[in-house]
Length: 170
Image 1 (spheres, rainbow, N blue to C red):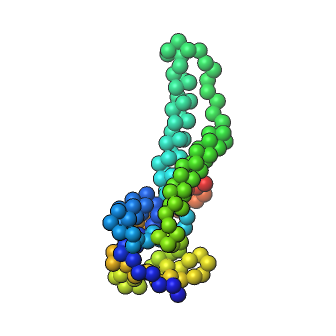
Image 2: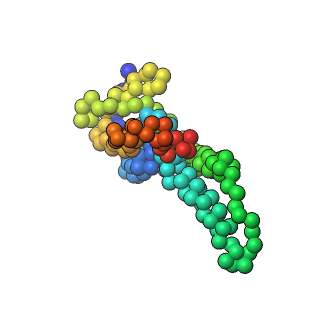
Image 3: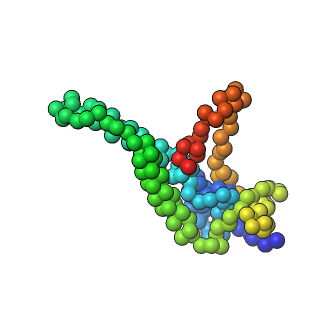
């Protein structure tokens, strides 16, 4: 088992985790960013950015409908849902790429991929996808892991009609 000692360990490489890691690096080079899944932030992957792109497509269709009020004659808009989502996903992938590039510019020794769990107040055990385990001993630990969708039990009756933003944008 590899052991690392750092001043600050940040668990989670989403928007908050990246911000916390940058702030830690402003005060020490002894900082470590731990991510359990993949780089790219919820905002860029399945949140703010793709949602705004979808809203922009709806607004464009709405403006075409309102064009006659400005003396502009148009045919009613036809929305090609597949083309809209293709554009949303293309742009989303571009946004995610910027985030991944940023994280990958940080030194390898300051990044660790794996799922972290506390073993005491200052010690994390990080299990990598490859089965490796690392022990991280940190003076300070920032938890910036985000959240996971939880369905209230009464929604379960709806079944396959339920969808999260993860489902929509992936």
